[in-house]
Length: 191
Ligand SMILES: [Zn+2]
Image (cartoon, rainbow, N blue to C red; front, side, top):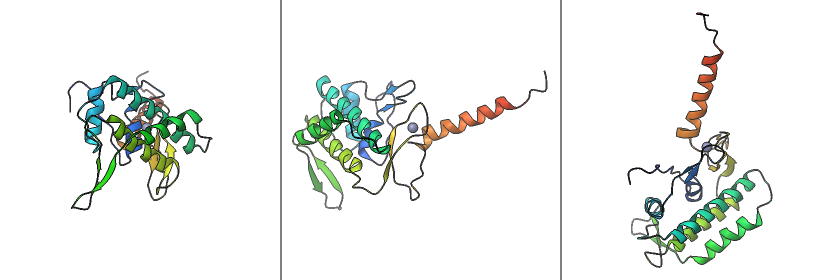
């Protein structure tokens, strides 16, 4: 981890972990991949290590991220998918040449065509987004109940009633806000 940059919000789903590199979209947004180096860091944490990234590749990544955000949001509220977002996701998916590799331990790894090929990594993320928006995986897209967040997340809970994109951040913040509101309501005896 590099000092001085916002940390990553990592979940179990690659595509929504990626959209969570921009948080609080409806509040004071926090950009968690502000530089090409931070995208390199994020990809490494997510099993898609590359050795370099240009600012043009970072732009491609952010364009894909916001397209996934738009498509996943539309899918969560059962709205029509925005055509431009679908186009970007499909372009990124088609442009990469990543191969799924089975390790001797029975794990899946991604092999990129070259170590500088951020596009390959983005194609894996785009394909992951396609699988959740298309409803191929066990779970349901939903929007975070925090008004300053409203991130699309993939709910894999049994009851499909998860409210927050991340219990440790948005869930906790809501709990604290409720607690503070209750404190204010108490009559002040000193007055
Ligand atoms: Zn949230």
